[in-house]
Image (cartoon, rainbow, N blue to C red; front, side, top):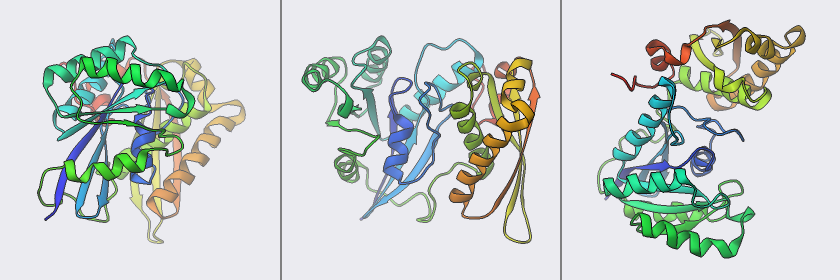
Length: 297
């Protein structure tokens, strides 16, 4: 008898959802940065545990949307939860019961989804505050189980993982054993470039950029050539990304190329181009290119 099911990781921006997905999957599947709202669309991690296939869904942080891009990200987050067999409500224990967390808990309660509460970053928070926080959250949404973890160092994550297989429905595996994610290689390449933009540039730049893979070509020697375009909203952002003498864009490319080579297990030739395109975050085509549906129909 095998079990298989979708487990959505839902929470406010910067709760640690992508870090938890990568920790449980044992591989870099979702980009991580100290900045909030890094993940923009649903990312699936495929995990085999004994006779169970756990399909982990990392969702964008849920927040008050303004732009079309924001609305599309929030819609992707709620779709990930609605389609799942089980939802992990991930809460930054250090930040506590914020207005965002209250709103998310209230919506989960309305949907009557199966929910487990996961308090993250317990290694760097005030321990006596954990039980009152758990009680406050349990009063807002019915939770089957509560786990206290640190996605950053792995504390408690194994207990959470071990508890998931029995909670999944019986059924056949939906993906081959050798697949780690359903994320296309082209989209994965764009995301790893975007991760380096988050890590290497100033506060205003990452949120004003998007990355699209233009070509992904296999070469006769087994390597792959990837051409990607970084779209920026303003000319000043383009100058920052390129850097003096092209130093910044070279560094972004070098780090992203290394990550891609490890994930794809082959040599990668990565070429980056930067273009200014004001208002890209309100364009339907740009949203589709980064894996999001138009929230306005």
